[in-house]
Length: 132
Image (tube, rainbow, N blue to C red; front, top):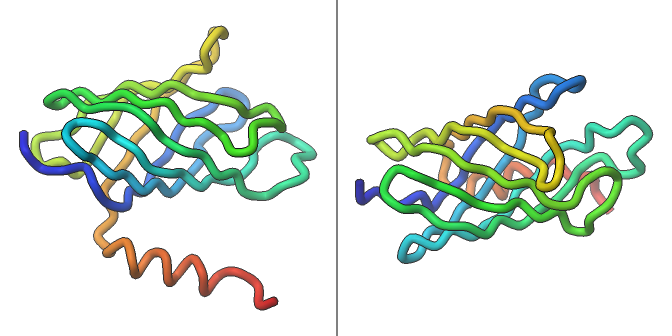
């Protein structure tokens, strides 16, 4: 498998008592190292912010992917989450499990490579932001 994971990914994860949560991830793969960022809604009741941002740091070896998502800033029930998954042969999907370190909390996730170029997604996201 030689296809790079660099790109924009639409994702979902399943969280007990919340259900399915959607997120948008941008991955950059360099020599097997993975970095990037994630944007997702806050699912904690009474959360004072509507959207969380997180950074990704991890690696890929063949079809195996693992990374840690670190919320920035941490808080509101969020800190770090570990992910382990498998990339399909076409490098268009990553599926696996997430786990909150030090707890029994875990669930499944799926990421699908977006068909839009990263610039188009970034432009769309900026267009959704309220005018200042």
